[in-house]
Image (cartoon, rainbow, N blue to C red; front, side, top):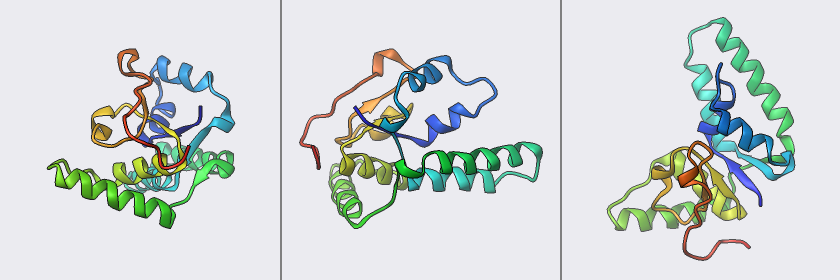
Amino acid sequence: MKYLLDTCLLSELVKAAPEPSVTEWVGQRKATDLFVSAVTIGELHRGVAKMAVSKRRTELTDWLEALEVSLENQMLPFTHEIARIWATMCAQAEAQGRPLAMMDSLIAATALTNGLTLVTRNVKDFSSTRVDLVNPWGQDLADKKRPGPKTRP
């Protein structure tokens, strides 16, 4: 199985005391099975850019640069195909009275387009999408399969 890592998962890994279940989950996966959306990288850069100049900001900047290098071959760009999936997914959610947050919906569309399972703590944020989810923070929510066809096998 291959996974798309949500922003919250990457943020968890750089905390002073990350959740053990999260670090354990990541440690049990092959690095080549873990992917990141360019949208997630943008969210991380935005978070660091909003910080006051400090030692922590410098540490996070260095971490983010190293992350980009280490995931260079697993960083997924925003494509026209993702844009089409995103537009349809958002229109359907809005028609049901459940609009999706911009960044979350772009990340979900990336997972759907690439046939990846999304790894997130924010299961509720993705509940109206067809994306398969894993929540390493809570065993009762782990490995949830969504009904509906995948965009790609």
